[in-house]
Length: 319
Image (cartoon, rainbow, N blue to C red; front, side, top):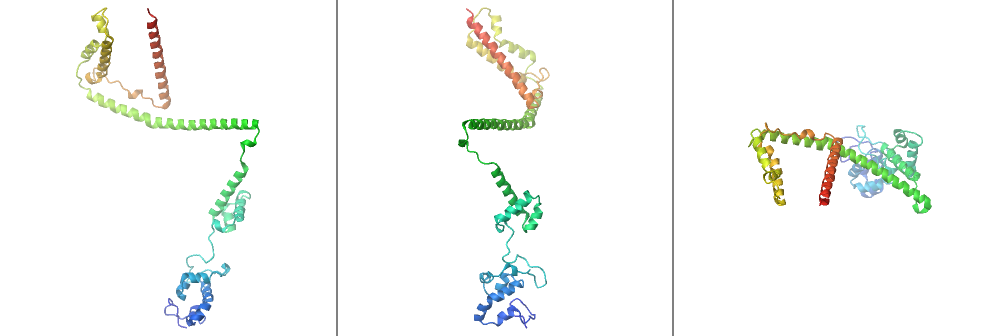
């Protein structure tokens, strides 16, 4: 028989070809036999889209015709050359979690957790993917952990039990706080040792290099600087005017001028006569050295404060 299917081409079909039978039917007979022919074509490997194209109906119509077709009747679909066709057979669901009831998931989890079977073995036995087995196992573990740790109602405990529970909670909070503080301090130490201190030292070295380069030729000699500095010291008034009372405001002005002029020494005197003091070498290399330096400064400041307090007290007590 000459091939009559729209995509058949110039070839001969067998006498029982369902498409040839379909072509010979009247419109009323086609409606009555469409489901039978659609099921036969589907068993022969045609997809729903191909069947709808060959019979000239919509894809939804063929879907309704094949709703009653059992998955046991689905046969591997192959092309005209015997190669497997793409897609999956109708009514064959993917091995997802929805395709496995809770009882099946519990059985898979028990096989892994209690019987010691591997995930691959369980997946092969139940014909599911390894992801489904892992998900079922994780959920079963969570369920068991929740059952192993029942919720404790504090109000249901006795007064002594409540006090013990509160003490245990306080101890655990202190323990967690100490562990957290230790982690924080370790991170701070890492940041200081690897970032802050090396950066400070590098910047001080760069500043000292620039300062030494600009101090090659000073504005005055060291002798000139010391002469002017000595004139600004308030002790010079006592030498020039012995027994004369100096106004306190004037003394403060000269003290401030003395300190200000002393600070600009590095800009006035040459590097040769007054070498720049290296501060980069005094920068702590680790946080431990930094903490030790802070403690020394704190002790020195405390000692100065005590000395100043004793002096002020003796001055008040003096008649």
